[in-house]
Image 1 (cartoon, rainbow, N blue to C red):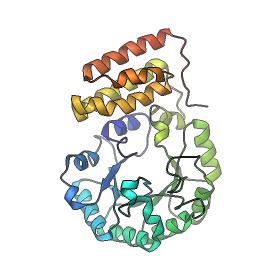
Image 2: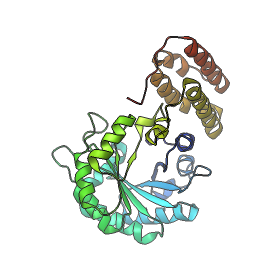
Image 3: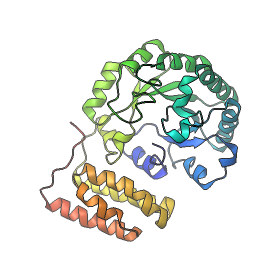
Length: 308
């Protein structure tokens, strides 16, 4: 979710019923602390508590120092990323690449736990590959090192984002851990959320890509009715305005394309994505949404539901 779960998206997610949101992945490298990219990624959402910052890296001392800085800046939870499968992260022996070095996982969690007074959590995957699933061992090491919760994505590093998530590993992990376990991966409907909770016995769910273009899924999982079409368009317009305000008109226009594209696809309007992506003006983007909303309301276009 790096590059997606920014302040505007987390603001929308919180308003739609998320009980907990985490920052985009932030590098622990000290030389990147003052860059605009890092500053934006660690910026918190006004009114949202706790403030959770996700860190990536492979050096225990560096991660501990970075965690201290974030806590001094206001972080109330430090989340350690042992799950990102991106090549640029794994090539630096971080993210899910760390699953190949179990002792280092323990050392990292231990160092960060000792360095800060706030809870430390871990986000990870089921293992390096389908043939080498070691999530249970990783989870036990993290708990022994002082982690307060575990977030488990139902794919291996090798799977990246392809194929279907599996939840048997999460059920096995939950059975042996004393700390809360949250399950992630392919939570795309209310029915799927209920089935995964029932099957795994997890303490909760984390929704990522399933909420892109459909953040109202979060409130629906919590028991709310699916919002009507007019309300969905209101959420989309609000999200677009938040992106323009947060990034400025120029960058906001570019960032908005991937989110609005997801919204339009969910609403059965994928054919309009290309034209929207060619708009290079913030006001014109908003105007285009108004035109699409008016046309959508008057058409027989079938809306893509998330409740199935």
